[in-house]
Structures are given as C-alpha cells and as structure tokens.
Amino acid sequence: MNLINKILIVIITIVVFYAIFLIYSDLNLVKDRLGEFKIEFLPHILTLVVLSWFVAFYRWVLLLKQSNIKIPILQNFFIFMSGYALSIVPGKVGELIKSQILKTKFNVPRTKTASIIVIEQIYNLIGLVIVSCIGLGLIIIFQIEFFEVTSFVIMGATIVLIFILILIKSKTAFEKVFHKFSKFKFISKYELSYEESYEVIKKSLNGKLLIFSTFLSAAFWIIESVVVYFVLLAFNVDILEFTTIIATYTSSIILGVASFLPMGIGVTEGSLAGFFALKGVDISLALTIVIFIRIFTRWIGVGLGFILLKIIGGFSIESEKEN
Image 1: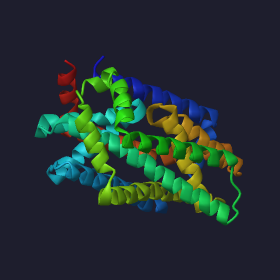
Image 2: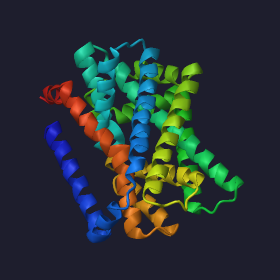
Image 3: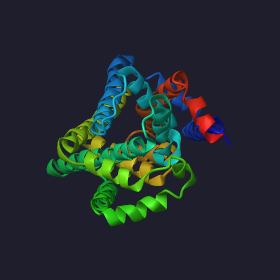
Image 4: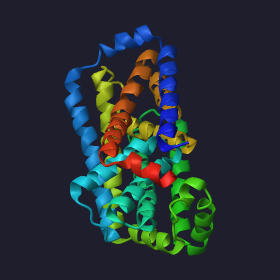
C-alpha cells in the first residue's frame, strides 16, 4: 500500500469520526452554534496559529544549525510544514518525511535529520510538561477549582519525560531502546546509525540550544492555549480561567499523544469536550468549540502541509522510496 492510500484511509477514518461526533451533538444544534461565532476574533486566532508555526520552525532551524545543516529559508519552511501533513500518522512518525526530502533534495544524511525529528518530539514534550505544570501551579496558588485527573495526567507526562531524559544520558540504555525501535519496518527504512543518532540527540539537549529550544517549545504551547482561549471567547464562553485552560488543554494533548492515535483523534477531542461540559458549557456547544479548536490548532496546518508537500514533490519522493 503506497503512502497516498495510507493517508486517504487515515483521512476517511478521521472524517467519519468527526461526522459521528457532530451527529451525537445534534446537527441542528451545532448549526445554530456556528452562527454564534464572533468573526472579529478570527484575525487574532489565525495570527496566533501562524505565529505558532514560526516559533516551531525557528526551533527546527536551530536544531539543523547545531548539526551544521543549512537549507535555503523558504525551501526549509516548506519542508518543515510538509511534516504537518503527515502528523496524522500515529506516533508522528510520518514527520520522518522531512528527513527523506532533505536527503533527496539536499543530500543531507538521514542519520542526522531523523534524529533531529526525534529531538523535536522530545522538546514538544518538554514544553508541554513545563506549560502544563505552570498552569497547574497557578491553579493551586490561586485556589481555582479543577479536576484531579488533570494533575495525574500532568504527573504521568512528567515521569515519562524524566525517564526519556535519563535514557538519553545512559548510552547503554539508549542503545538497547534504539535497536528495539530500529526493527520497526517504517523506521528501519531510514537506516539510522546508533552512534551518530546518539551524538546528535545528546548535543541537541545541551547548552544554549537546550535553553532556547525549551523556551520556544513552551512558547508554542502557550500560544496554542491562547488560541483555545480566543475560540472560547468567540463563542461567548468566558467562565473559564486562562490558567485552567492551559492545564486542561495540555492535559488533553498529553492524553491524545499517549493514545498513539493519529493526532490523538477522539481522545483529545473527547477529554477536552468533557471538561468544558463539566464546567457548565452545553454539550453541543462544547463539541462545536472543540472541533473549531482542532481545526485552528491542527487541521489548518495539516492542510497547508499537504499543499507544500505537493509543491516540493514530497509524494513522488516517498513513492519512489517505497518502490
């Protein structure tokens, strides 16, 4: 089965899920809710969405620079955004398409770039944990009501992050995990080198790069949380504190990541909608808001990613590799 067919299957599955999601919430009610959206918030939301892309892109540039990889800025942005297109692949392994494009177009070794893509995901988790902990900390300090499950989710993500960082510090443990994951068919195609991968990952988690990349990762999740806040305001929902939104949104993302489903589909939406409903938001409105949040924070990026992937010839590159 080629790449395009796999993507189509995932997209059809996701469309069916959203259809069920909408039917459950009553299509007529959803239609009425759509009319409540305050269009004046749209420019602010879209500006923040684009800003989040550039924050993540700047981190990508810094990580490439650490490995002495220099790509023309526009082409580099196209390649970076093409990874968004395949973020619908479970576990985000689809983002490895960036590694293949860099190899084909600029002869950059996949052993370097595949490791950088892994580092991106580690930094995503670092930023996610930091921002969620900040949100939870502020909730506790200001004694804002919240659900205990949020703290357990954040605690679990923190433990996983600590385990990953300890794993990277231990070369022996890293080697064992590396060889185990290298057996997976999708990853084995990238012919990764243990020694080179370890060095790239270790260097990318040290010094100034660690500080800058952590800051950018945290900034990315804060920006997305502001997008969520504005979407709520656009639907006249102002009963939630921003600190509560930070903790619950990031917790929903963590649950989605832990599910290993494409973009956490179903798990992220369900947990976030459930939280809104428990906070007093009508269930039909909560489901509508969650769909809008996901469109702005994920699906616009996926759509643009597909366009740019097509422009740079990413589909043909992957097809040739499979053949």
